Image 1: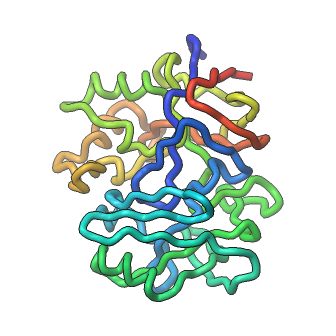
Image 2 (image 1 turned 30 degrees about the vertical axis):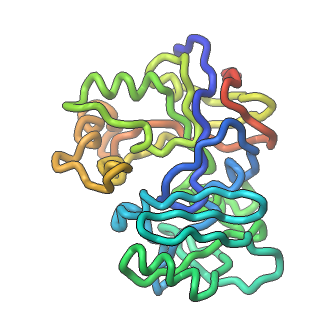
Length: 269
């Protein structure tokens, strides 16, 4: 294990699954990760999650949370401001990969906004605090996750991206990997070996490596997929374990809550 003097250089939440990131200089950490991270998502008519893997235009939707409202912007669309649902509202059942869980739906005018932009039928849903979705579908009394793929929080070292960019035909952006936390000042891939860490007042335990998919090949600026499947092709040449997809980044599960800030030092426990 090798690290120098790691510190948090970026904090990003993704309020609506697969949309653009919301960069913050500080954020609250809850049991499900950063506050509001993947607390909303779009689903199709069957209640199955819609992601940028098959609807890349999602990457151009901006989503932030201000004063109890979800604020949305998209190219050639009017801005949309939605109240965060309160307790006691009727729920609907939705599917996130292999998990089925409860969510709160929005009215038709909201769904129409997304359907017009994406050019396909869809519905916006919200995960209330009462929803149970265990990490990796395991113990329902154990760690929980929102609408993220599998774990509450993804961390990547800036030096890991720097190393990758010495190998790829052309540089790629950290935005293609969608981390919640970027750490500067550690050796490349040091995060692979961190079992337990502390940032500010919050402690985290490692969950699993992040196995990368085709989403990394889509440019978040243009929503265009790379014709040579980069950087996935390069990652596959040196970041695979057996027959599994290549990994890049480490998932973490919060042990405590609290505030983390850009500039906070990361301590390996």
